Length: 445
Image 1 (cartoon, rainbow, N blue to C red):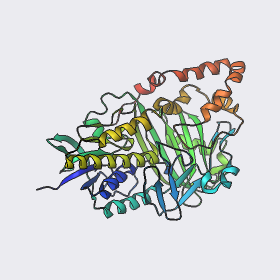
Image 2 (image 1 turned 180 degrees about the vertical axis):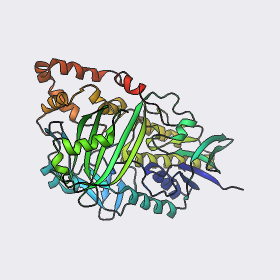
Image 3 (image 1 turned 120 degrees about the horizontal axis):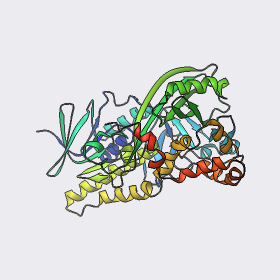
Image 4 (image 1 turned 45 degrees about the vertical axis):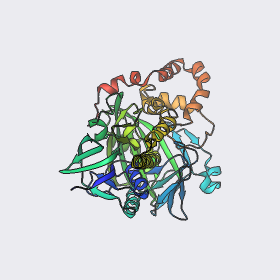
């Protein structure tokens, strides 16, 4: 007779690993299923940073304890080992296409604060996965690599999961299989969501890059054939290496060409004279409106599965922990014959910390900006009016750039009313702004 599990977790990413750890540490019988043959291998584009290290995110603080080599979350009271290299990042610099810098954080002051001045931490995700694999195995989680889940069905008192010729039964299922979740699709969670577009990302590991500052996140826009892309530069944890990322929602953009154009033709070309590409990753992600209630039929969604584009690594870890604890509580309540409240606790947190706290349309309008201001000159003009240093921030949900631009509106109205009129369209619903983008893409199943 096949072993029955209290909790089946699908997806060995930050959310799935942490969910399995939470349930396993509580003594539950847990199965962790992952489609990759090697669960520690990174196969998709990721910037590999912990974001929002200087503020609350999803009702939690994130700390990297370098002394004991642990990533910790004090509000919810959990931590796990990360013994790989890391790099502190103290500010963000947004460059307009003509090279004007807007500083998100006074770099000198942030550095002087030491660990209390960081806005993010760069880490090696493959080492993180190795550390998390060790931790889930230490709490008796059964790990099954090479399982590509194709079917989920409700049983009398639980859930059955099928994939790659195997069957698994459990009391609860935590779906942590990412932003393109197969489980969310086959179980109907996506039915009532609004589909906006695909998000395309290309990441390079690079050596020999020489930006003006070594411990800053840099981002800018580049316009190329087929549309526009955002380019990010941030340090890797390995000394001297960087991650260069191209990202767009325009399906006609060749991201490889966009990154090459940025590195060879734009204001920053001198930074890349000695640069070498070491490794490349890509990703295509579905962008939907959020899942409002991430639970039904004993299936709980965690991490990016129910979010608009992603919760970032930090948010995925928090969500995974909350989901693992919720499933644990629910299983124990059922075993004791008590009223089941564990799931509702997770749903309350999801509503408060994500759905109500972060406007998904505002988040996605970051990627819509180049559909509003459609030339490099317009972006350089509008954002070039921001001269002051803004608050230090590496939170994609709450960028201070919008506030800086708001202060410049009277000047724009006086000097360039046509630009102000374009900016006014940012108040339109996202599906209106993305009408043409949506027509040119379709969800990945």
